[in-house]
Image 1 (cartoon, rainbow, N blue to C red):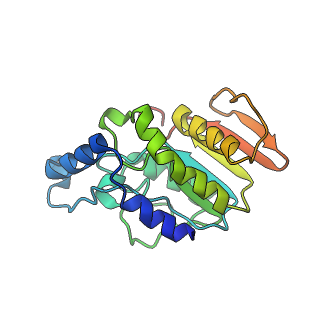
Image 2 (tube, helix red, strand yellow):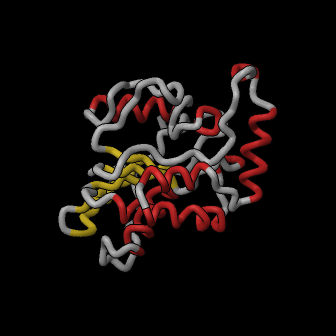
Length: 203
């Protein structure tokens, strides 16, 4: 399967009834600043291609960010912070990410998430994370040039490590402890990094 085909599968998933109901309800009653916007209101697919050496694993789309714009980390303050940092490090073509189709392109970078639908209170349930897990497993099998994996927040970090272990990219049996600035060489020339999620509370 091509990674673009996998992203299409992500965008057309209906596995989690609670998340389907929530993402659609949010679109029907947006805050005043977004009234008039047509919400994506579907799972937000990963962004990037299979040649990337850097993988970033976030938590889930924001209700009025990715769930509105249809692109991961786009249209919210978390995305503003993340893409500004990626631009400065040479991993994307511009430092702003306002809407899908704004010209932004990732460079040697792939962005995924532990959950691809916006969850109530930013808290996906364990079974919902489990439903999204096969997507991340398949992505790891496609990203054959991978050298660095960054987990944003504990959920993103844990999801990344568990998936890396499941597909055999690390022989570590015990999940390393998440921490801001954590760095682990989990296999030869493969590093797992941990950092706070770039939400308003942390930035």
